[in-house]
Length: 219
Image (tube, rainbow, N blue to C red):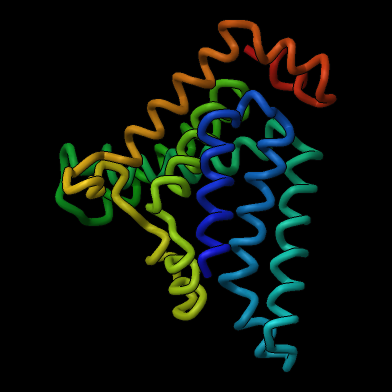
């Protein structure tokens, strides 16, 4: 499973530093990761019900789920950005906003949903900035190890999203020192991507890679 960990960290670093700059390609990567991850979690239950279990069936389901997610993301850029924006917004609402004024209860989920809706609205209308935020968030989660391969395996075995939930404000031991690795990578990635746009490097990239201009022109 070392290869899976390396693949997740690599994909995370690409999203952290080049997410919005790669425009539709980053959206397709996010779509692929979400589709493949969803298929990895739910496929065993579905395949088992129809008697098509096994490693080959799971691999096919993951690839198909990933390609479907990438295709849907490519077809509808703004809508595709709105979906992960909702997820990220709800996540922030659940772990960052609600602890400021409540210890739990139904209001926690209400705030999470409202933050998710706000995130989706921003993702749909401010595609470029939402894409920078979302790719930095998801990329930092993967690159920092907050979402390791083991978490996806646990979610698949228990058919629950609980193992995929993490505290964005948590610290990670690096060289014996507690470091907010996720938060650090997220901030560094967002600022780096913002700098790429401000310096005009993304506009130059748009002349080389078709599709990048779909985000470069957004405000």
